[in-house]
Length: 338
Image (cartoon, rainbow, N blue to C red; front, top):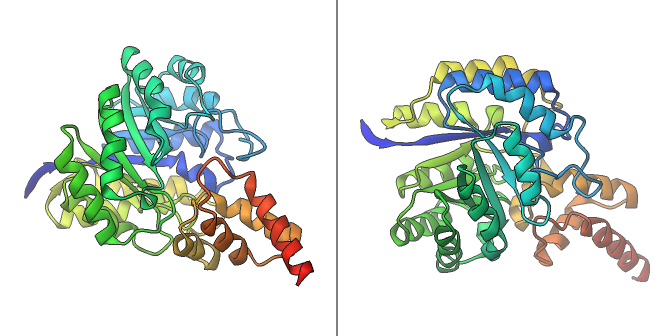
């Protein structure tokens, strides 16, 4: 038995929100969060897919305000930490204070991989309020391992409890993960976590590579529900970790039941690697761009693959969803001028 404890972070009610067009109801939030809590996961993340205050024309409106979802979920969460994601520039400290009033215990402050400084005040506020605070570096394939260490140290100095690096585009393969996690783990004195997307079919392999290099917080979702081709599938991940002798502290049968009985019925489509989500990983494009790209492709009569390749070429990052329409329009003009 590997005695290293692996903390499982469930993001079904946050990253999974992308895949259901931010349509979770209060009943679903309470049922899924309560069922997950009974399985022994460490953190349950709940917010709009783009973090608190993400409900907007740019990122997609939530059917139910996330504060109502948090209020509904809180009584059902007895053991895990009810958690929100906050992307500076989308969410503010005032938004975080409102989430506090709903009973959250942790916040993950997510910035682009080279912009950790934009999250300093949010980490510092969270710690002053007694919350667990996590520094979350998105699109980590876009920076070298050395740059990631530099940015992580900004979060460490601000008081973060652990650093999470995210393969937000599902672009990395196991060796990419190993290089980043191993250097980060040897360079800072707080725990390291990892968040994966399955656009190239590598989510489980990448998560295992992260664990083997010392990551102790791993993100996953029921049925892999999430942006793009989805996230690391939690019930599969925990079964594999169990077989390898890692201590996750979770009830694997319970996770299977939550995925089958609570999450699968609310899915709008099977979570799969289709051509467009494969292109997200291949081009290195932020996974939450997928549905926006489909809409733009339909509106302008374009192949979504062409839009995704151009977004990747321009190195668009999370928060630039509004540029997808501009890119589509520019491609149409290029075609007319040929």
